[in-house]
Amino acid sequence: MSTLTASLPDVAAQAPAALPVIDLQALRHPDTRAQALRQLARTARDTGFFYLEGHGIATAQWQGIQRRAREFFALPLAEKQALAIANTRHFRGYTAVGMEITRQRPDQREQIDIGEESPEIPSGPGVPDWKGLQGPNQWPAALPGFREEVLAWQAGAHGVALELLRHFVAALQLPQGALDALVSGLPAHRSKIIHYPGSDAGAAGQGVGAHKDGGLLTLLLQDAVGGLQVETAAGWVDVPSREGAFVVNIGEMLELATNGYLRANVHRVLVPRAGVQRYSIAYFLAPRLDLGQVPLLTLPPELAVLATGPESDPDNPLFSHVGENALKGRVRSHLDVAERFYPEHFARLQAQARAAGRELRPGAY
Image 1 (cartoon, rainbow, N blue to C red):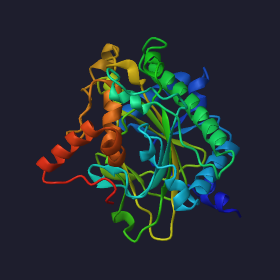
Image 2 (cartoon, rainbow, N blue to C red):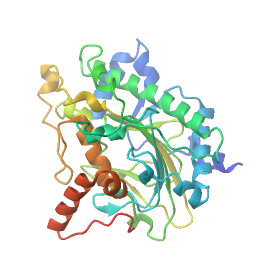
Image 3 (cartoon, rainbow, N blue to C red):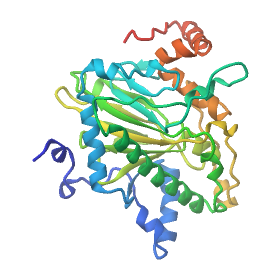
Image 4 (tube, rainbow, N blue to C red):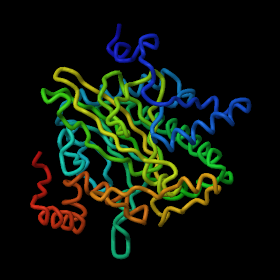
């Protein structure tokens, strides 16, 4: 049995789903659509997390992107560091273990961030800083075909995410196309290919700290190694892999657009035990950077009465402008990029940290 095959769970051996399961085929079929839409609306409101099956992405493509993840992280550190995220102001590239920050603590994972391929928007007087998020990706020369396969995977995930977003429109009884304006214009969609090295810290280690995702929808492909947890009223719940299914969660921008009817939930990843490696690939569907404010959707009265407003994280408050909010999230997470390319933003973060009795030290982890 190959290493890749061994990493995939056996359907017969799977435990009952930790989260609700949404079938995209049921949302498409006229005989099952109405019931599936009710389930989608209820699930997204109650937990903000679910498994998505029936998405149509071929098994070969699913397995291929997992193989590419392993190939990339098996490269010598020097080759990965040549693609360091701090090389450019676009927040695209490689981040070493301990160099991304969540809730003021270093995450014990390495990753490569990849956005939509786009030309750089030159900086200058009158150009907002958030336009620096646009630009080209960095690619490993040592892995022929890596760029093409990752972009093909990203395109497939993008298509699934857009379709799911439109099913949300129907589930919320909104006019067709009500959310289309959020995802046209300057794209902010991106992927993370992630590796969590095992550690003696085990479950005590922060693979990635507790947080909400900032965009619209996240689609996650994860291997059979556990570690993902979602926060519920009953405490932290494990979210194991489910063969052929994405884990989907609601982002803060969709929570904001629905005035809190749809919920973005807090989640985290624990470090695997020593000798075990965890790999995952996340796709983030985000609102366009030049949108300005996220529009507040007018829900039907029976849903609007259940919308209690978005929950703001006091440690990471939402900005009203989409581009500014996206940049804020990046500079807080990648201090090395912030210090080099966004000194004013870094200075504000440093002042806030000092007021709390801390000192920011990019690259000190």
